[in-house]
Image (cartoon, rainbow, N blue to C red):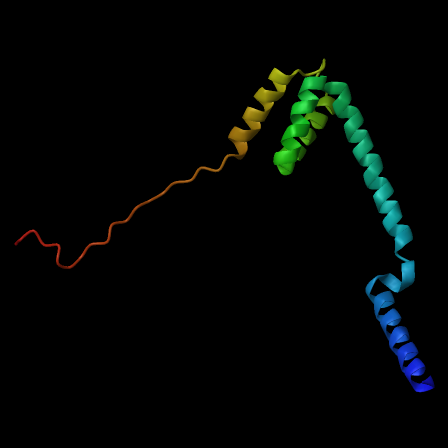
Length: 130
């Protein structure tokens, strides 16, 4: 029975060492990770503050709805709006109509144009000299 306990303890120690190596030596990296999370949270709070200052409630709701469906597009529009606010291009709060026109411009600029080309295969027996 003592052998089984020793083996079990050895397995536990080995597994603990593997987990510590995998996750950064037992929590030493968590301090840095917390700092990154706090910095990200501060950045998000600042972004939300700026957006609430430059967008009316209905426009903000529309942007949040878009973020649910197309998060990359919503992030792009948010960054454009923040940049416009920082450079002084936005003087008053934007309404839903103005946000829609901005969204249409972004869509036109980022829209991929696809073309389909059909090539017909020619058969050797397709002679007109029948």
